[in-house]
Amino acid sequence: MENNKAIVIDHLTVAYDAKPVLWNISCGFNKAQLTAIIGPNGAGKSTLIKSMLNFIQPITGSIAFSTMEDEQVPYKKMKNKIAYVPQNTTVDWDFPATVLDVVLMGRYGHLGWLKRPGKKDKNVAKQMLLKVGLPTFASRQISQLSGGQRQRVFLARALAQEADIYIMDEPLSGVDMKTEHIIMKLLKKLVEEGKTVIVVHHDLQTVEEYFDHVVFINQEVIAQGSIQGAFTKDNIDKTYHQDRNLGEGEG
Amino acid sequence: MSMIFEITLVAVVVAVACALPGVFLVLRGTTMVSDAITHTVLLGIVLAFFITQDLNSPLLMIGATLVGVATVWAIEALQQTKLLSNDAAIGIIFPLFFSIAIILITRYAGNVHLDVDAVLMGELAFSPFRRLMFLGMDLGPRALWTMLIILFINCLFIFLFYKELKITTFDAGFAAALGFSPVLVHYGLMTIVSLTAVGAYDSVGSILVVGFMVGPPLAAYLMTNKLHVMIALTVLMALVNSVIGVQLAFMLDTTIAGMIAVVTGVTTLTVFVFSPKKGLIKAFLNRRKEQKKMDQRLKTIEQAGR
Image (cartoon, rainbow over all chains, first blue to last red; front, side, top):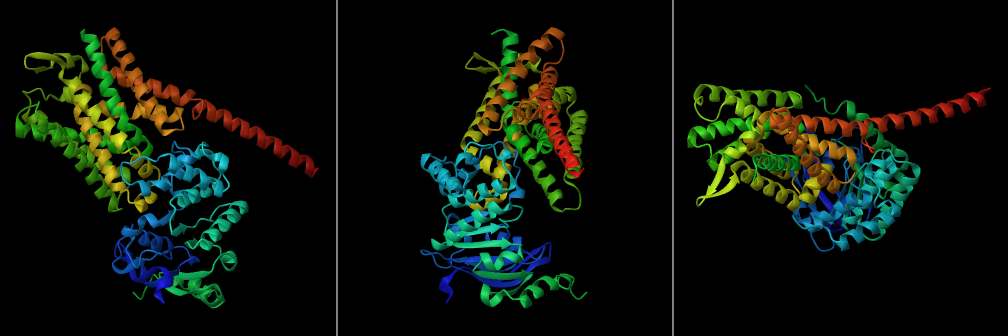
């Protein structure tokens, strides 16, 4: 049963300064499906992603990745098969770089230390810019991009990683409708190609339309499952209404 | 080689060596940490001097570089407690280390070359007097060779780790996900900055090193949107500033390093005002254009309302 899971998280607890952010999380992300991680602000969605990407060491628990070739391996052995899209507000867009420079960064993981990106990498990067609908933007300054274009550049960078698993932190936040459609179309195509896509999502309105699978999080896993089975009013209420009680504890 | 030529040569090499790591300090917004380093390496120089009793010992370099890195570590350890603001952490560590060094010099090293003035201000004019001799051959000013080696190390570091510096500076989280440790690159850069500061203190003095590190890259940043062009312009600015600075200092018979720092300040401010891409005037014109556009739109709304 577990071999249809791309990521299996087992009893994961994460804390900042002895304050638990994620508590005893056990969940799985299906291979070749689009899964949304949903929860209110401060529920630990970004922390969950950062734990998956090995930025944060958990107190207990484990995270294992599987693809066609590998079974249940830790992040370090898989990092070139995992693409990451951080929130685009976390970087300085005045940095002196062109769009192509940024997309090329997606190739760096395959290159490793010291090696420079070559012609082949540049071609991959340009191809990905075409996919996100920005074929003429290669030599454009990143400071001149709109919010939606920034997000598409970040997506192109993740695509250039040519990974099997895509982990994205709020890729649809603050983007225009056109960009949202382009991004969702691309994500669906990735899934059709057998890739696994995990998205931290904030817009409850679009969950049913966009995703196959959902994981509700508010410090703990509240519910998970297919959209048909798990995306119920009851689970939404549990996730969003409990946040006042959780976190404060009993003294 | 004439003396003024030798001094200019030393000045150029010092300026370029300092400016190169400065590119990434400016882009990372850590210029104040480098300000701290350039001062606290003095403590390392003094401590290593007490051990070796030799100002020319390479141990001096290593000791001082280590203290520079320790400064960064101490500042970051304080910042990570989240009990005080980032610049406050710099404000505690930097004067503490620096003043201990000053006290040690004034108290115990009064009779050697390590006098406070020279350490704070440095003096390029003296650089031709301390020469490097090899098998009885005069190879030129000692400072020139020291700084050439440091310049070479800096060039090599940036050349080898260009991609790593770029990605960790632009997007540390993404870099970490790919396996390029931002912490490792950060400490690598800080080691280079410390080493450069130690080498430059002798000719430029610890107060002015940060000006040499920050001025040219800042001017270059305002002139271009490409990283490699920014590095090239940084080198050019450092070169021009130091050549003009040396000439002016001789004309006005004043401190050379100080004059270069003044020229650097003037050129950087000039670029800040006049830069065609990101300058003050350009920003002002842009704002006026936007204002006009908005006024126009407001007018049409008013007319439609009538």
